Image (cartoon, rainbow, N blue to C red; front, side, top):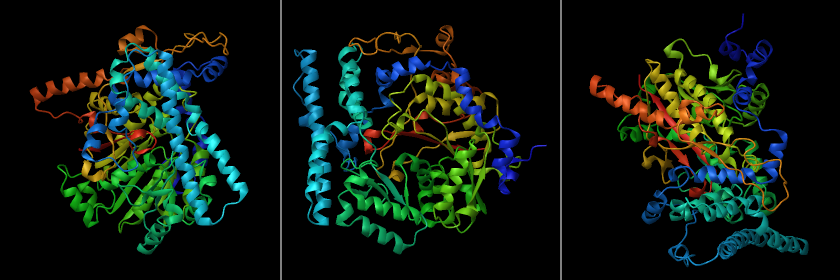
Length: 609
């Protein structure tokens, strides 16, 4: 008889026991996508990468979506109101009022765009060299070898500042020039260009001061980071003084060359448990939950903040002696550790249950958390090795979790600035294949949360089929089952974000697939006139089924959300019932062009009964 995985986890034997008795369970999520969707042949994958097909499909897919998926008019409004942080670069009126292109040939337009792009690259290069010059001035005289190295950087930096030598931007320009249906895009051309330009640059370095440090430690770290040696490279964000963001193009790969002293500083304080190197998107779920008061309700300032909200979330957590947190897909462990830091500050007891389906990843996660140096972390965090979509639901309501972190496996196109293999190998079927798995994981997370508790659903993807479609699909499925569990999407007040720009979720999106063989993959790969890959758009589930789209399920399309909303309105008229959940616009999108970050999606779902 198989042991209860939760009981086995308490004894520290969950990983080995689960691996021996159910060896196929760990691969279920990874194999299901390949079973539902036809995997491209090796020849097709090679052609796809060498021909730049991933760039073409990526641009066509996101440009074919409603504009609110990746751009929005809110940026212009915020710029007028002075809400944009200082590190966001926007086009001035003089820049946007360019000479009209009417009458110019396409070749002339491309040459002018290339000159403008080269000017941007030179400006970025000048900023980095200036930063390097500051470092040289502080450290004293510069040797001839260092001078030659800087000259080499000046010559080569322009080419290497943009990922893939700016191929994503060139594909965008070609798409806008050749697509006759891109008239709406051309009106918002500057915003589209800002989105794809941001994805074409390396991800800036980001880190935070860990929670639980005493005032002396925090003050010392701020003084060191604010010194002349480091202040020309990193500075605190405007929305949180303990989160630091690099500027002037400083990223992980350029850090040893541009500022080796900062690299040594970060390595030292990462080992002693005072600094955590973590992306802003990865910080976002726990950061928002803390701002909303789901962590540290005992603190007076949090109670004052929650008293201003129309609906007082997590009110029942005040009476709980133990705060239970479940991280459904915990690897690599940054969110589990972030939650453990907050729990370590509380006078009441708290536990974080870190789960991952892969045993090796779970072991690496356990070692990383143990090395973190966070106070009492070994007593706070427990580890489980089960399939997240089949996670054991606590039988007693009192044993359910007040907070469930659900950062599901995704296509990861929001991490394209960090992982350079994402866009060259991009297919729409990657996100499509993960949709049903993500829905099942979110449903199980919703079934594990306690009354008045909250589920944070998040992905590092900007694809609506992995984001809003999953949220709507999971809540709709529970509603269709006539479940006794009731949920609503929480709205995060702008006042709690302290200037952090988060776009609202979308209520409309499109579904596409790329059919193998439609681009003549067997033709010459080195020719000048290669057949460009094209997407197949499906406006409805019925249309996709009629065309034999692999893995299509009804919850991918936004129409099911509209249909259910209409049904709920009818039910409300006849039975005076409230809708099961609020608008998808309460979801939050972190776009890379707003604050020079990666892309991220998060939705906070509270159980109401």
